[in-house]
Image (tube, rainbow, N blue to C red):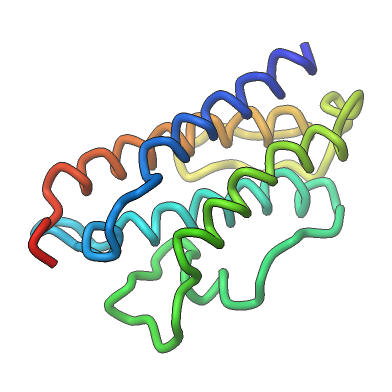
Length: 157
């Protein structure tokens, strides 16, 4: 079962990365009417949540720049940023490496019990595998948002 989850993480992440490769800065930063965030925020948020759900939940060292909580945590938005966010190149490198680190750190550890957490949608996560598996759902939701943001982005920026 471990290999299935790690295979799915790599697949989902590759789809996310391919969807944003080559996008212009204007498209990355565009916040269409009705949205609070942009594509760049969604990419940073995906990385932040997966890092916390995989590594922090298991009490492992996270590779998380200090600015990520301020820029990409739930409830933050680009309109309130007071610092320069990471470039697309940096985000893509981090997003591409993350699944490899997760597999290396948690190979044969997915059934380990951790401090439970009940998500905002009401699901209680109890093991490393449950936390990591939930990130697939989370990334899928944000992937859909990225696709919508790209569709409605002001391409003239």
